Length: 206
Figure 1 (cartoon, helix red, strand yellow):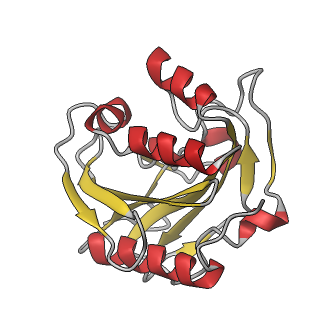
Figure 2: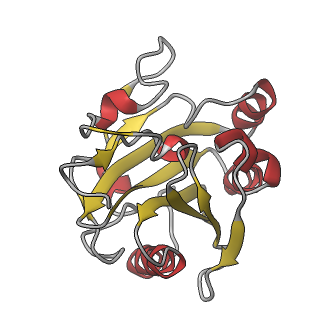
């Protein structure tokens, strides 16, 4: 059972839920947050609204302020890093969340163009991208009816914990919700996507 007293250490976006321990500062739990190339700062107000609000995923609420990081969203192989650059990646804004029976993170990856956001989502949701993220995992895919292009998967992390990710684009934003929760994951992930999409009108800052 995941609880506030025994929660996983949340990393940034793809490195979600990699091990148990005390809750980490999200600004330092990112693998790239301390690299010379990466900078971490308070999230621009224009992007705050694209992150989860309390209970938009049932029994899950943010527990720290949003942060923005210009480094890679997770450790990438050379081919993935090259694609990220060619996609016109700008930054990732993210915010961890937890609840009585789970933990998670919501993120917005900002790109220079709509096409760049779509190209990067195609990689992250490909078999190659998922295996780069969680080597050896077996996944089950799902879609979210009513939210254009929203797609996700459920599987397990490197420690065997049940996790799920869902991705979609809104203009030049690629949005992501990642969870480790007890019980149904698809229903909770879908609820979060639908809530953000409806609240923001499917938009992204120009």
